[in-house]
Image (cartoon, rainbow, N blue to C red; front, side):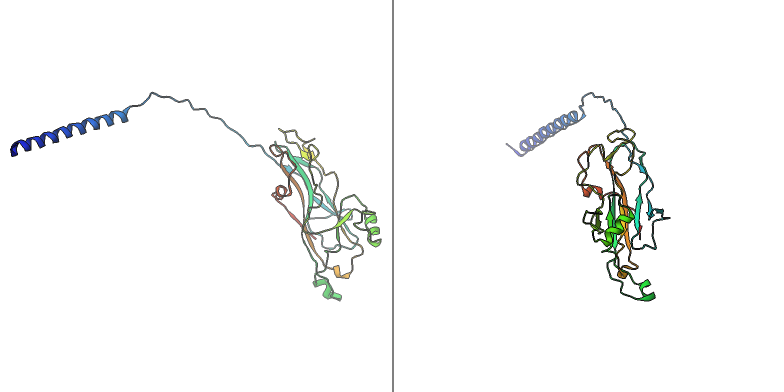
Length: 250
């Protein structure tokens, strides 16, 4: 084969490759452009979350007299601080677990050993002399228990020393419907209103010594509500602790 024939053969080979490439490209284009007929119907809907909205007014009393505001500035040994929850109302749609508890956030514990006017500027010890009672004891009962040294023994008064770790009034187990408040759309409790079954009192030991002068404490009294639906097991303290609090002071 001479040079000219070789050249033609090479050109012919190139032409064949070129045609093959074009056919391949056309096949790709046809494949990409192919589609099934299609249509779609789109549905829409709405969902509104329920509401949980409890309202009420918590007030303090000192020996039965209403306290203005949230601070008691002149607590005397033998005084009883009462906590009035009034009636709590659920203005929302959802039912909820509900409870009332007392929690101390601070209690002074240093002895006030100063004398005269110096004692006025020295913080005293309330940690040994503040008691929480929840059995409806009268002030006279509590004072008598102080001097009989039976506070907390369960004989004349069901009181325990206040501390900053416990939720006083908390239950080991909560049950429906007694511990549930109903909402307008969910009736898992007995009513859309609620009051605690028992009251909690703070008692300043009548036998407190001078070392307790000018002592101070801060506490929260909480009416807490937690969703009931999809949460029907008795709530844990971890769950209750997610609820917002407001403080009172002594």
